Length: 276
Image 1 (cartoon, helix red, strand yellow):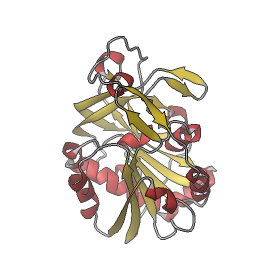
Image 2: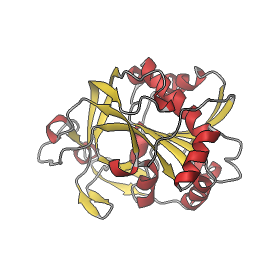
Image 3: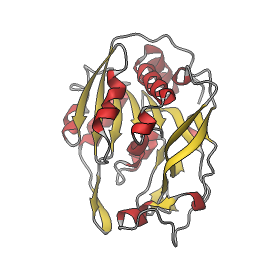
Image 4: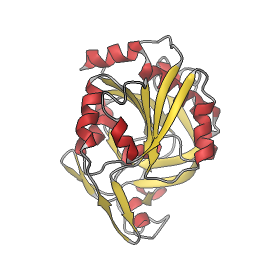
């Protein structure tokens, strides 16, 4: 995929912020959007968000930010229940119109029974072992409060404006499936993405937190931020953003603001349509 060109942003922007399905601290998270000059935001939780993810109802919004984890219901001590929803057809039609989307952190784990969702985002976090692109994969890994250095792979990309030299952050990282061949890499972590440095997601949802006993996982990708297209829409995924410590990192704040502006821009829409 060819890299997009440097863009000039326009304001004001109207964005829809979608949450629910994974716990987070509301006030510090929403303060990220309050601090964005020239941005008006509306918050909606799943499943009510489904009604807005179609061409007509999403029309007032320049972009959608997903910080949700729909399609999965946790059952204490047992395997989760996966759900499907008919909104996916409307959402695909919305993406065909070129609606820009930003997916944050745990949004990569949403809709586990919908294979095309992973293709839209560019990867998949698995709470249980499962098939990804026809390949059997173990459950993914997580590690909270990792202090690591983020290198910027594409410093000329608009999403990376102001953080070109890289930065330090304390945040949660994932050992998960990343479709590197189908995305434009933006950010890489210097953390070592191996089994010994992560904990099993499946053990966690079954009641054993912070354990990798008996769990096996191949070495994973250190790519934690990328851009791509889905149908005719520009897409950004940022793995950053687990908790208030990450929200308060000024470099993450810049990335998120840049991502919102970029996916909303006419230039990004033109680029995405050219890729399609």
